[in-house]
Length: 284
Image (cartoon, rainbow, N blue to C red; front, side, top):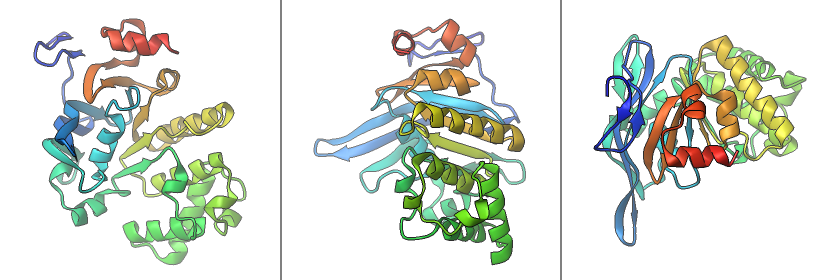
């Protein structure tokens, strides 16, 4: 498929993509299986993709397409014991240590990667924020655990992180608890926690779905600005092709656990190859 073609084996249209030194993450042949009463079934099947440094890759599809399971597989946060990676590799490119296959790491090893190298923000921040701990304690303890900074230094970085996501009166916010903040403000806190450790990759799983349109636009603008400032690579999971149009450099379209099309955002919107992609675009 040197100039872009449809694979006879997978039926996926894909322009030619070369894995270069500029890639930060590479997934090859990823299959995720879930065990149920009728045995195991794949929810992600033979997925391969790359993420370049500093780019935004949108993985789009309807509910049940496998996009969120892909994100959880990268983070090694699949629901246990029902779900597992049954095949494939998830390579994180480290300029100092070479390639790291995340799929082969145990939980202790993966904890060193999460937050530090790859961070994730979820659709509903209250599922990730501890309701009985202050925002400050959660931020500071996370920074301390990953950096070895002193409590005072970690607190300074926490305040800087809140300021970076445009939370007013950042220092006083450290004393507040999650329930005291609005939905949009909680999502900003989650972004601050994710970016405080300066990860190479940020995975955002439907980060604006639960927010009203105005706040949604503010959060997306914030992600773009922070990406430009830090050079972070972003994987954005969404069902909303309007969000894809606003954010994506490249796009992967998934359906029933399989990739049906991938390409640059310009190609996907102007020259979609798959019928399913055209259906998604028609719904915008």
